Image (cartoon, rainbow, N blue to C red; front, side, top):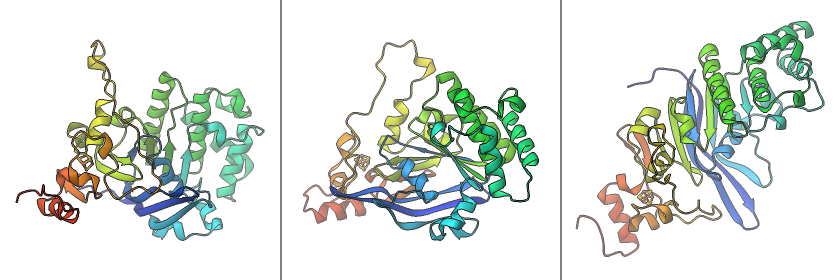
Length: 347
Ligand code: SF4
């Protein structure tokens, strides 16, 4: 079904490399996806898959050196964020695109009251707002994100809040600036399970109420299930499969996605003595990766061509997928021919 919602953020062929003494780490290598108004997109993958670097690149927050955005575009409101100056970027960061991280203490200043931090943020992005107005707005959004007795608690310091409450404060700060896009990088990993569910529900309800688009970064496909409209699965710096969430769960095409879905614990089999599935092996070392499918040492469907060339991207059953299983015989044979294999397909 065609999606008529407006694209608000368009990431095109993004490439971010880290130039290290040991070699070039292609942390993000040709990543493309679009975020639509009011929708939530999930970016899923193991540690080191490039999901967080993708989102830091969107905000141009890559430490340089050793990092460098070497290619691609991030189009937001008809301009390429990657071309903007630091001053122009400050207008966008926190104001139009906000980020919340795993540990809110990394973003909150421990020495300043929540009220000071919120009022300053609001006034930084809107000089016409008085201190009193900014304070009232802060209290309103703190109430919106479920901080009890917000009028009194606004003058507390971050350490006087629990981890879950601090995460709510971060979401409130994003809302106070009317952010159009909220990037949530593993926002619940450091929290208790019950609090995790509350924070995810909060992000979802905020997105609905304010029409905020959300990019949710997580290693957990279970988190994505109830929350995201679309999912990008990343492996070794690239998106290996992208599909609407329901389609991805019903029929994963890439063997890695299949493995990730099988690894999610299921309520309906919780009594079973069967061992929980896990993908064997470790993610690859991404320094100077050879041109092959980097998943092949862990893939139970690997073929000869997988070891010699990166698979072409295909659109198949509404999914975008990069896997040799969906390539044409001509494409596979071209690889086999180039390596002189005697096992060409369809001879
Ligand atoms: Fe497995 Fe080959 Fe597909 Fe890679 S390209 S996921 S190794 S089948």
